[in-house]
Image 1 (cartoon, protein in one colour):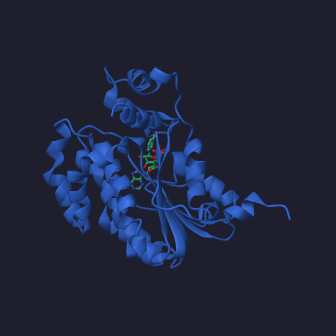
Image 2 (cartoon, rainbow, N blue to C red):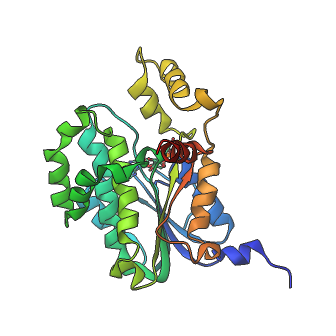
Length: 286
Ligand SMILES: NC(=O)c1ccc[n+]([C@@H]2O[C@H](COP(=O)([O-])OP(=O)(O)OC[C@H]3O[C@@H](n4cnc5c(N)ncnc54)[C@H](O)[C@@H]3O)[C@@H](O)[C@H]2O)c1
């Protein structure tokens, strides 16, 4: 019997919740999920212009708003993709961490009772979170907080660290997210119910979020200068190009599909070899 890729992926009739779906990678992932027959609940602070089962608006940096969003989702969800995020925004150190980590963790855990046994959750971290193992003192402290409020307070109390040569606030938020995935792999609330947890970690990708990074590194405040700086920082050394949204979205979708039913606890770098080279350089220097 011929194998069918759609059947192997197994999305037909599955209930999927995806955040950040109004734009970029998650928008692209939503298009693929719809074409594979999933019932998609799309969440974003902006309108989602796709024919989803339900589009839910909310600010996922805010605890009450997250509670309201979770309440509007169905009682049984097969798969969750946590994709929303903001880029580097100077002066908004706490906000970045509330959107990219504190709110993400809170929402994922609020959704757990709705995720079916054997379900899956995949986050979008970032290659910016690479090397999180070197920063365990701070990451461990954030992960040890038990509530949204305690995590928020920890970030508030430590915003100065971003000006002191450590990871920038975006990197830190993504380091926390990557470390969270690892920390929960064998956690009872996940493995006890056979819920798989993974993340993809994209590098520089052409989506609207890149404007945040362009603005952060621009020498004269223009987007053009920012684009040049980003090219010099991330692409020039290997004659590279930015990734396309679908080059992140399609692998993202696959991680939570039936094809990947034995994949869990992984942070999968999708960066055309960037972190592979870093691994090699680190190993070679030893
Ligand atoms: N573009 C890149 O180069 C890059 C690289 C690595 C990781 N990422 C990560 O990929 C993910 C997707 O980003 P993208 O590049 O597709 O960007 P994008 O800006 O196109 O999409 C992000 C979406 O998140 C939504 N969002 C942001 N803050 C929100 C909030 N508080 N509440 C609800 N929705 C909110 C936005 O409205 C937007 O629709 C993000 O987590 C981002 O950090 C992006």
